[in-house]
Amino acid sequence: MTRRARASTRGLRPLTRVLLANAGPRLLLGTALAVFTVLAGIALLGLSGWFITAAGLAGLTASAAAFNVFVPSAGIRLLALLRTAGRYGERVWTHDAALAALAALRERLFVGWARPEAARRLHRRPARLLLRLTADIEALESIVLRIAVPIAAAIGAAALAAVLVGALDVRLGLVLGAWLMLVGLGVTARTARLARPLALRRAVAIERLREQAIDLGAGQTDLVMAGRLQAHCETLRSTDARLARADLALQGLEARTGAVFSIAGSVTLSAVLLAAAALVERGRLDAPAAALALLVALAAMEPFAALRRGAIEAGRSALAVRRLAPALADDAHPATADSLASSGAGSPPSSASTDPRPATPEAGLACSLSGVRAQHEGAPRPAVHDLHLRVALGERIAVIGPSGAGKSTLLSLIAGELTPVAGHVCALPAAWLTQRTELFQDSLADNLRLADAHAGDDRLAQVLCAAGLADDIARFTRGLDTPLGEGGLGLSGGQARRLSLARLLLRPARLWLLDEPTEGLDETTARDVLARLHEQAQGRTLLIATHLAREAMLADRLLVLAHGRLGADLHRGTVGFDEALAALRGARGP
Image (cartoon, rainbow, N blue to C red; front, side):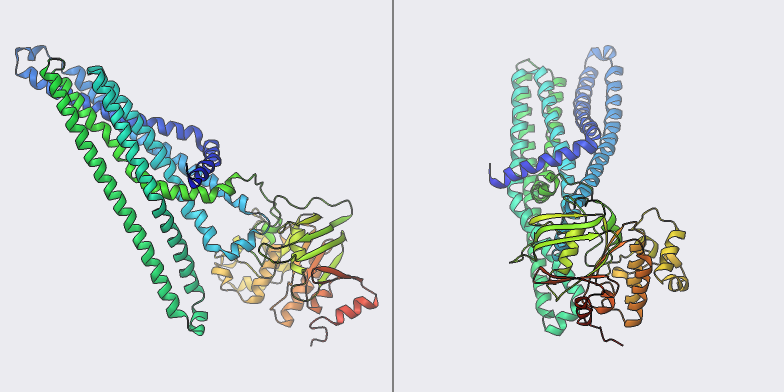
């Protein structure tokens, strides 16, 4: 077994656990109905052939009056009804089981990805993670609907064919059953092996095509300014051509597999016909029994031919299993909703506190760090070194320092978005307002309800008023139901920031982490936002990462970071505090 095959096999274990845990009974029932439907179809065709032949021969002899037409015809009607009902039930239960399993897998992936550094990974490779949640999850559907269930049905068909034909002639039944299994499963396995590299090339081409198309749409202006628009379009066309070649190769393989199954079916039918004719000639079979054997062999090959599509999809499904297995195997726990709800920027509002989340600090503290060293993924050196910090409940602290000093990293550690390489972090659940405002293409109300899914309109109106946005919303025709475009399109920068502040206010968290909350706002709007933050933060602990004097003035304590180390811890009323505040940008503003 190859390394990739072993990886896919190991990846099937967590997938199977999720599948059985969420849809096991339905899947087993659907599979049983699929097998039953195939068996009923084979029995129906065999009985029909026997009945027609026997009735025809009886009509040529004097035994026509004694021939019982009622029992076989009733059996045919019963089998037809059972096959129809079985097919309906099989489709309902297997698809229901598959959809339930895929929904559980998506939830499991969300939880598995809501870990430290998840937001940065999402921003670095958004197309790749989106592909995991869409195309890769959908590829797993084929494992149930086009591989597992059809294989069970095909094996059942081979077993029934061997039993029915074996009842007429044991050797013919054994040979037929072995031939069906050998050819059917052998061709399927061979096709799946050939489809694997083609599926890999196709998946890579789709991923790159999506990334390049997104880059073209989002960065068209930059590409024009850099003179790279034509080159990017050529790259996009080249990727599209590679995708087309991979699709053609897979379609060709599917066509060849279909031809092989057709040839195998013809060979099977011819061989059974010759064998049945020889047995009839020897007097070991009568004509109706020979017709039954012939039609049973014809019907038994059909379920194996249906595996053709599953064999083509197997390569794509194996690739999806290998990609998703690490996330499915992790023992991920649901993250707290604090950072998810109040995140206004920097990262999509995904949970910042995950497993392992910061432990609860000792009484009287909002957070504490002891000997913490942290390093971002792919970074050549640690972002913070040997960091020791204790923040009491109710304190207001500003973290200052040059860009790259480790201010945002410190907030990430406290929020649980970044796991320390060494040391310990303890913190209360925090609401995190990050640098960029992340809003979604949805209504104003639903953007706010990311912080509290059960908040009523009165509560939303209350926090909008506290954030200074109530008058603006009142001027909108649809009020809280006003739809926003992607990224909050339709709001000004100040309105979007105030909406993030309103979302922050919906959270009951006692610890607020603010990362440059007024960056990019004009002076008037910024001071109004800060005044509202000051008013609404009564009784809460504030930790503000900033390089602006207007933001640092909210604090009673300044932490000065330099090169990832805590250089000074200054309290209001000291000379060092005043000097550090005066050195910040905007200290002598208008």
